[in-house]
Length: 297
Image (cartoon, rainbow, N blue to C red; front, side, top):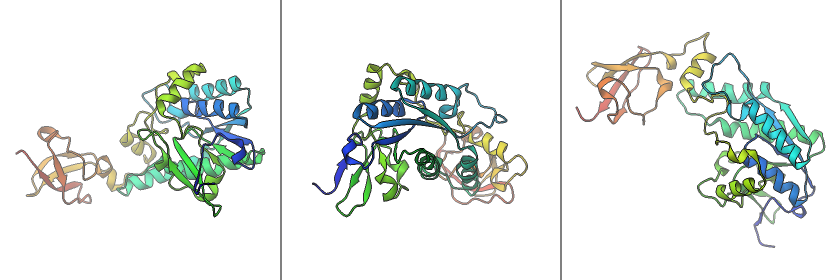
């Protein structure tokens, strides 16, 4: 046997069990994962997470990404087509206390978080997988474009998917060997184009759905409004509006708070809109952003 052995995620003989729970979002990737795992000879169950339904926060779209009603219905429809059980798992409290709260904390601190990484490690590969194990399903599968490898010393590692344009292994960097050992990525050897083609051949409705690129709990992609909504009882300095000052201290525009941009952003204000600029020193305590270096004036 070669070391490492790259696992396809489609051979039941590679694993100590044939019982696999698939995290189903209602999208084409997880839907096809269910179908091809069932065809490969695994005993499959579908599990859809209920993560977010903050109805007090207005959104601009009728479908709330992977948290929308249509996504739940599509997951159930695919499970019925495959002839497998399907469960909806309520993880709203865990999601809010870990992923959403961390998102708020990081943004207020001036950092840009990646909530998908935290959701994968804490929500999917801990909370959801524990639910799966409680009903006797020790293996876990998702529709990520990634692969796994087994080493001669018994450890497992994460590999990129074969589709370089769609590889999602970077979202899973925090997974440890123990978690990877029980994980199957049935799409890891496929390209996105091949996935769509197979889904169409199987008449999966998800093949026609637009792929969501937004954070699931901010489907309208308006981070600023979401932060203000969640922090309505307090106004951190990082959300305080104020003046943009040039190097001489002259006011040249307004900013909407530190969380609205970072040092790579352009200043989108008045006659400076679109001009390449860089913040060389920031001072928010006085409601002003100091030290704008700009070109083209």
